[in-house]
Length: 168
Image (cartoon, rainbow, N blue to C red; front, side):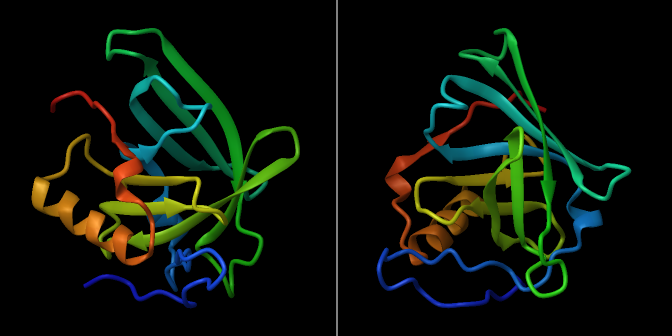
């Protein structure tokens, strides 16, 4: 059973970026593997991408994004950032992430498995979208299920790039 979502379709953009009602950040912490994403310049050419989340002493979340240039044997690229939940009571799944000084971008948990095994992440625009998993690969039926969820929200699934990950 999936968590239900808040909100409704945005009439001016034809996509739904409403978030899950509940997010237990402690369950969300840890390693996530990038299964698919929209292409954007800050991850272009990266494969084997992971995101590691941990709590910082100041209550924010430490974010380490890692990936390899062009092949799984390529050079490691890593970026460290931070995230915060501006309104943890009313909107726990609406995070803000920063990799550059004090400039924050949206990190919206659109869909989340009740066991925290996969997530669909978006932003305030339809230019960013990620499918994340706790494992480097997911089954084809699960991938198709997630594509259906994404399509129902009005996102263009043809723009998703499947990301090469190491075999387990």
